[in-house]
Length: 231
Image (cartoon, rainbow, N blue to C red; front, side):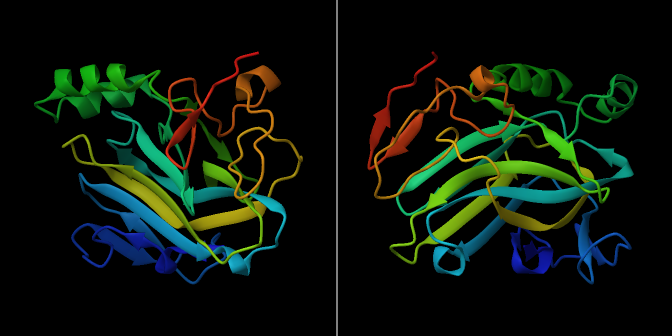
């Protein structure tokens, strides 16, 4: 797992925007809490040579939310995983809508209608991801998955960002990014390097709400779009 200190978080060293502090339930000495910002961008990198070959990995950003978290659900955050010349994209709302809290928060924003319209426009463009609570109390948000062929030492790039809206956001705690081998060996939701792509289907068809490729985003390899099979 990459700790928050090993990530590239926009303006994380500026105490006006982020605060580094220990969290009792964290596996690291410290995590970073978002105080207030409008440009949210988190990036992580790792060399594929450090990972087991012939293995599919899933990537998650591990977070928490403080009680007064705000501005994190007006627009979806874009999540990406890239290795070599292969890239997958999706989006996720960091928190589910809380109607009472949202009504209070929107009073602070003069561009409320613009945010609502943008949010509606983003829905359906790429398959929406969900955040899952872990047994340790933290929340994991899936960024994507990839297959490490092991033939080359390639850089794996992972990111989460929401830079479209100009509204303020706060209350997000970032512990790090976790990579772990995929439990079930399937060809769904994977990116392959140097191997034939098998059956790529909608995750909904398999009852899996995880990271997949939507009919719009598809899978891109070497500049070509692979057809989407909805069967």
